[in-house]
Amino acid sequence: MTALVTVLWKDLLIEWRARSRAFSLATFALTVLLLFSFAVGPDTATMRAHAGAYLWLSLLLSSTLLLAQSFHVEVESNAIETVMLAPTAPAAVFYGKALANTAQLVALGLVALPATVALYDASFREGVGLMLPVLALGAAGLAAPGTLYAALTGRMGARQLLLPLLLFPLVVPCLLASVKATTLVMLGDPMTQLPSWLRLLASFDLLYWAVCGVLFGRVIEQ
Amino acid sequence: MKSIRWEHFVLAFGLVLLGVAHAWGLFYAPPEAMMGDVGRILYVHVPTAWVGLVAYTAAFVAAIGALWTGRTGWDAGIEAFAEVGVVYNALLLFQGSVWARPTWGIWWTWDPRLTTSAVMLLLFVAVLVLRRTVESPEQRLTVSAVATIIAWVDVPVVYFAVKWWRTLHQDFSSPETVSNTMVSPLRLAAFGMLFLGIGIAALRWRSAYVRLADQSDAPELPDAPAQLHLHPDREA
Image 1 (cartoon, rainbow over the protein chains, first blue to last red):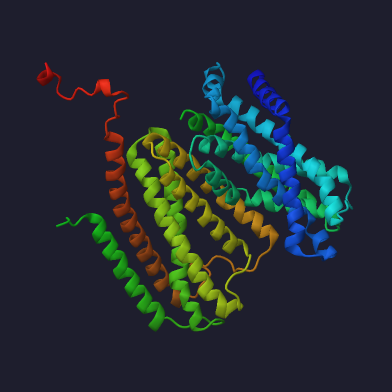
Image 2 (cartoon, each protein chain N blue to C red):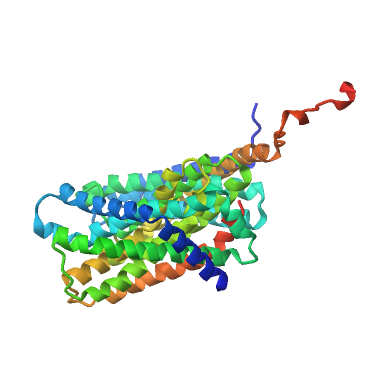
């Protein structure tokens, strides 16, 4: 547990010290968010109805940059070897890194959320507070397989292509549930469907946080 | 001349079974009550789906075996079964579109089974791309085994997620859901497709195994030219 917290703290500290990188990432997310309005056209009602989808697509596209970066810093000067030399289980390193990535994705979501409200006239009929569990569960769903795949492709030449190629089809259920849940929070949930989408997100998270934690040791041995 | 192996017989047997099943399905079995002759695609579409899933499951088992033992045989199994699965999966989507156009009036719809099949194809194509990208045999074994396990685990989750989202496709066809007169050609076609799949996978496994074993056995290149003493006795 101490190792997990240490890895989490180390990753967040690295990101804090390289704040310009986080700023670039946030700018990228906002740019993607802005581009959807040009793709869809000026119809305000359509844009409002799909605001949740734009938010999550922007987060998904930004996540590949964030995840690749989280392992690039480890591979750059073979830092990961030193991390793995520490007398700790590889799973602790995985959960530390995955939690750090989740936290950064949630932060990115919190930056993109006001922009979504401004650009797409989104409102939160079910209360903006409900966005926090949706963001946390969705970000965790992207972060677990994303961290494993970032480790897997980290040393490959074609990692920029391979990470999204592997990750995007895999996170279809997570993306679907996150978009649905966000749309329900924004447009209202008269049929009380939100809990079932949150349950689906939680099940996806549980499955992948467990499976990826088990497999990470083998991946990092490379 | 290449020797005839058991997989050639299995493949030929599969083709014969498929031939008989399709002759039966096309010319002797009654047309489907609602769809008419279009419904006869059942005899090729349903077995393709079944055997495609079996091939992916076999790739998943091979991936666990590869991670567990680190042996080239299992690694070749991932390649062979994932490739067969991808071919069957692509065929499945093509047949589905051909059938959907006259039946639903569209080539494609975002129904759970169609979407899951498309996502499944992308997941396993990514595994094959990954295999081609990695040159080190040990690294390739590990990364493709991990990606195969994760892809296979995702399939039921994708299905349920999209099912909640929207649905149009009818329930699975099985001997319980189709008329008795159609069951025999369907069963025969399913076994034909299965034997064909086993035959192709075995051929693919053999060629993959020979190539991968060659790569694994190849000696490491020396780090520095100073170590290049091929015949030290002669030099002395």
